[in-house]
Image (cartoon, rainbow, N blue to C red):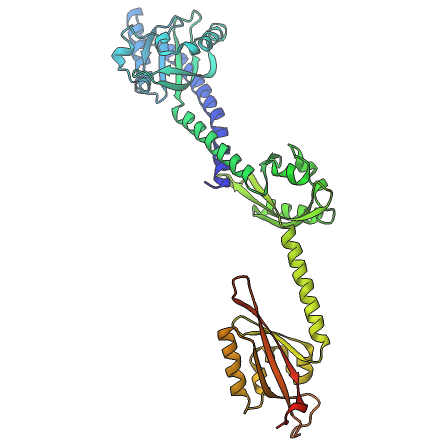
Length: 435
């Protein structure tokens, strides 16, 4: 499971519990209103006698209970169960007959450790006529415990008759157990990876940091870090980082930016900051999950490579020989300035095998053969050939071609494979003829 999935489940489950309480409270209010309407309808019904009013009331209550998908019972505060609906018997495994036999008491389906909670609820019922939703457990017929959320309403002043509404929280509890597991997995992953990890809530508040922050920066951020993050950021990078976050917030896109952070020794190091938005069902950003990866060694290596390349090019342009390089396949990718001075070709012409047009036709087959053999074997090669000079020489001149010594050496990686070719063409006109 990915970090984003873990955080998404975490947010979803955090909102379910309040929703259950609201649903129960709303259902209690609806139930009490329906009871009042039921009593009013029966009271003012024509030709009603005390006998048929009682019969009609009980019949109406039975229909009322049976129609509700929420588990409901009528009970007295003394513990007698007066009526149940199908949802309740399904939840606890009893038949309706067993529940209403008189043998099944409220205390028998309540584990001892939950009795004090029920006593507090009774006090509320006697004072206000109902009890706010609270969690407890009931005992199933087979003995296992069923976690429920319970609310009480519709109680008469003496507590002889009230309605108890239950929501089976077995699935909720399972999800909570799963949440604890995934939360533990998330924290284990976050604490074991070398990156600095953080999360940001929908309101922009940073609410989690792994310990790697303290190890690298000497400072362990806490809530409110969104107001002071710039203190750990290089002053030259603060505005750029803020602009990237502003754009990502507006577009609900990924943040990806290189910036410098302050290490615990006071020096600044390069880091790659990435943050991914978790999008809620309504399209809003529910959470940000982010990491900072220290890339200072990588950046320094890149800078050293660039500096080394500058030194190489400077040296190549300073010597009188023609210098060129090629990749492992033999594709030429660099010529020094001496090449362009000597041949008059453009960079496009030179990289497109234009150099072959300048080698004497009688020498070209041998040159190509030796070069292809070197590419295949990786061996250093030397070849004597004539090269046409196109700049500073009149057409038809006998000195159009100058004899050169070509030499190429392979650069190999740690695995022994050729990664680059470095070559020179040195003019040796005095060692041979020009034609």
